[in-house]
Amino acid sequence: MQVIEFNLDIIGELLLLLTQFTQARHRILKQNIHCVDTQDYLPKDLRADEFSEILNDAITEYILNQRLILRDADTISFGPNATAIFTPVPDPEAKILLHGTKAAYLQFQSKKIRENALNEKIAMKLLGVKRDMNARTDGSLVSRDMV
Image (cartoon, rainbow, N blue to C red):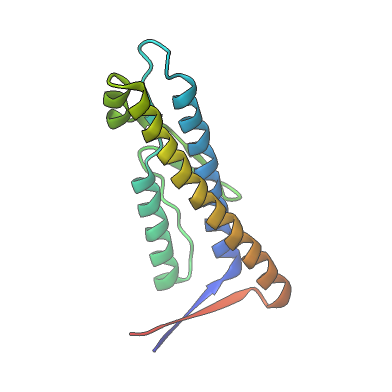
């Protein structure tokens, strides 16, 4: 059995970044729906795959070296105090749907919004759990994995 100790402040920082990502993505997806009738509108989205890879790398770095390193990427840059800047990119699949049927496009955007809202809800719930644990412990969370 391998014991990995996570500092609750690190978990909180990652969860805050996740909520920032989901909130920024919500605004972009909402804009995509708002502009459904705008001629020559180019739908956008955030690179969830890139963000997920950054978080995975940060967690791996923390496990291996007990330090949190968030590396900037093409569309994501990090600042102090768990802040980030997310740059939207064109969404080619949404663009095709937008030039097809409006109903299919709106359904596609709505599905993304629901998925994104669920991710934000989970992150916010975990932040609440983290806050409660911080109030009761020394700030460390021990996770036991089977090896």
